[in-house]
Image 1 (cartoon, rainbow, N blue to C red):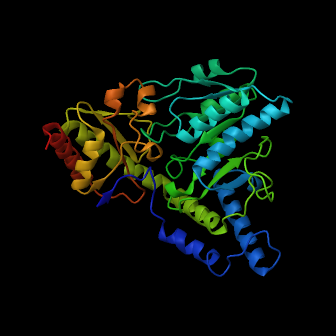
Image 2 (cartoon, rainbow, N blue to C red):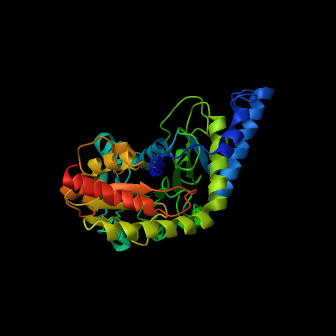
Image 3 (cartoon, one colour):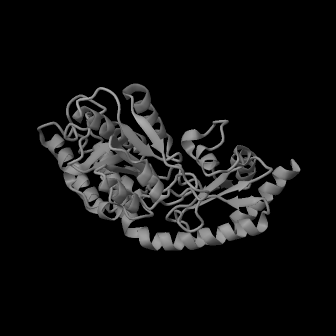
Length: 384
């Protein structure tokens, strides 16, 4: 079976599991405990935080460990917006700028703020390649804008945003910028200086760390209202006993991904482009979605008008290829992809989408996969 759904999740890397094992067994202590076992755990947590901070170009104190990307996005969007609201001594109101193609954890967090806290939201439109026009972002900003939150790279079509330019526009108005880097991590630079970001979300399971690991990197100058209250861990920003082994694994996975990033990106981009070219040549109904150039190295996504995306996926799996129709967080929904619809793709065509996402370890030709795609589309079209 060939697994090509790495945007949904990746297997835990052996090196990561090896790094974690001592903190699941011998040094399993609570890092808040003042004894030898607890202090060993605390030291490991401090070391993991420092290693991650170096990769991101941020301070050690800026790193907040979370249970994954969804929690990190919730903490960034709700925490920054509510803190800004409280700083105005207001109980309701404010403004957030985002886009219509964000991950569900961003969409639902923004919707919560509008329902419960009276925020208004502007969703800057995207073009047919899923790109945001910086001038449109500038026009969307208001005096009461508390936050701009934009995904670095889209989880369905792989389009990469020029977040540095978008952040510079926000900063001209004194507005903090949050970047959801969950899909970009491991493929693109995470340097805060390069991104211009005030807050960055990362999920470990996209990088070869376990599910349930993640972080929000947020500059200390940005006020943040915590979502979880309790013992005051993570400098009061996220209470709860830290997952020390998970933090160690996340640090190890990030270091491995960063060390491999340039070579892997170049290699997988070449494989991806050959795959895209072959699919488009073999399947007349295929249309590439997302930006043809400014896209993640590991993402190739298509629509196949006149077919069914779910039926193609079933045919592909019969042929030994596992892929997906889009975001795993929306799997099972009868609704067309909100990303594709926002890009101007008709809902009935959006429901024919199939996404192939490759890993750092991808080697060798993908021609056999392209051939399987062609055979699967023919089978669906013929009803066989």
